[in-house]
Figure (tube, helix red, strand yellow):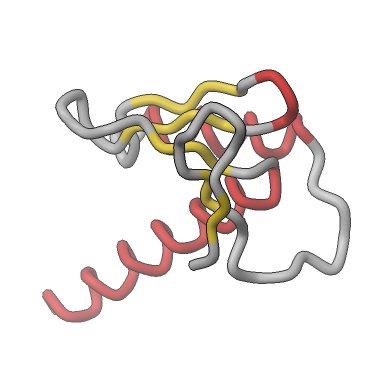
Length: 90
């Protein structure tokens, strides 16, 4: 996963997969809401400049996602991990 350092000194997580279409803020917000509702993330909040602040658990550091495409990539990664775990349990 590539990342760059934003001007505030933190780490921004960029999408690993190039999106062939534009991802809307509304689409990213919908996925963020689902991830939080199902407790797959503790928090997901849009930040100024199109970035997203996420936190996996209350005691973990806040991470910065670099835009809506990165939020969708995170949702896809979480969904993939969840499906992989389910098939291993069976």
